[in-house]
Length: 169
Image 1 (cartoon, rainbow, N blue to C red):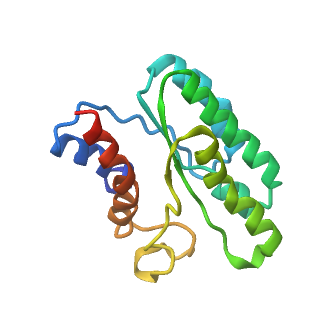
Image 2: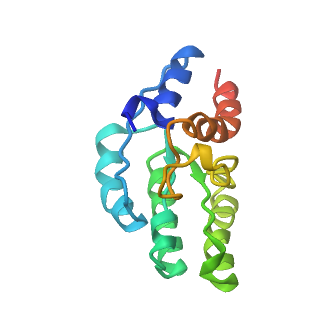
């Protein structure tokens, strides 16, 4: 998929369309885990001083069966670091396939709402809502959205982020 078709690029276009004065820095790495995101975040916060940080990580942790307590700790540290740097945080929640078992799913999927409540962050409960169960919006691997799914992902983010931007006008 071309970079300009990604939800992040579409977000940049939407911000321009609505005349919001934000620049997008996409620091995501395909296949990354919360550990990788946490390792990169302090340098990025220091260098760019973002006003808003969107954390859409954890899916690869879950798919690899990483202990949910480790994922929770990494995400919590990212939220905390972002807030300590005066950034508003949006957490994008992840859900996993049912084959991971009820206990693992409950532990993993509760992370996002728990952290959003604890730290009063913005929350998209399920980032892939409206995409993951629509084969025409998914790549052949059945895990990643294709270019047709990207506008839906943007809308999932925008439902939460857009009203927040409006408050700041």
